[in-house]
Length: 127
Image (spheres, rainbow, N blue to C red):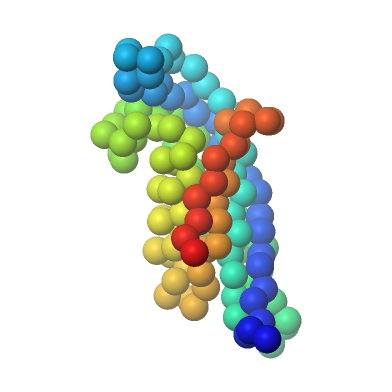
């Protein structure tokens, strides 16, 4: 039997516009989404309260990362001024940003999933 692994998951939202570059050979028309973001973190131990990570703390970290992008045009902001602002690229970028913040605390990001519509999502995780 392996060692224990606790998974903590939160969701938040932000609104932004984007245009995919090279979409069907051109730049996609400007359009916006109410993006939904789900982030899952894993912990091997619980603290003295019995928490792997406080939901509110994980949500705060995620919202801080997303705040500069809320109600903005992604193509005008780093890294999406160079990196095509696909949902897949957004998921990977958010994963990496969250991992930078949480790994010093002994936590590992398990997965980040981004929905651009209720039935369309992309996720990124490292096994």
